[in-house]
Length: 218
Image (tube, rainbow, N blue to C red; front, side, top):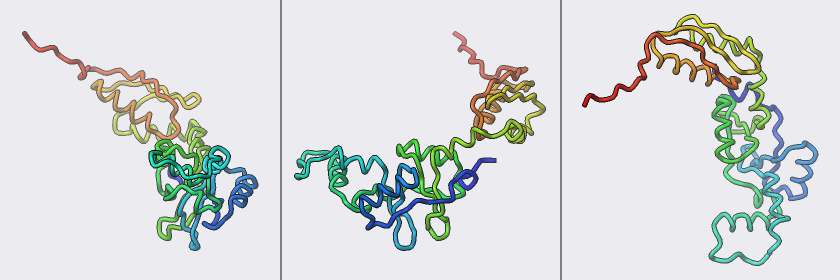
């Protein structure tokens, strides 16, 4: 069964209102030891996120005159953020969010695709912020016990027959026999997709190699 965000998320959300000052944001990050804060509206719905990278532009971009018309869109955006003094001016918007029911794997893909280290978690009904998912929370899936992993793996393979399963530090070794080689490859991928599996060693023998390509007759 896929692990969902609600299983690993932090229940505390560090958030500020859109009119929070630069100094207030820095103070919140320092106090709660976070690398980003969610910006919320009056109803606690996320409207953006201010990260340490956004704040560092204040130090990097010290030019206060207008940027050239030939500057890229991203350069103009960075320049505007560097001149910002409130959360509304500094934030990256819209906020990229997940819900408690989002799979951890999908959340990890979002983080990787958008180069972000945390995601606001919103209530699926109200849209209000309900917590935060950090990269370290996602990595908790790799601390699952061998017993938990084996139970999920056996559930995945229950229709394919009996197999031996050995687990060491997240690496799974599977032994047994199947009819076709394609089945062995399919079960290997199924095990690899179990949350918390680091790698798979397949020692499953096949009676028939149905993946052999037969050369055409001349």
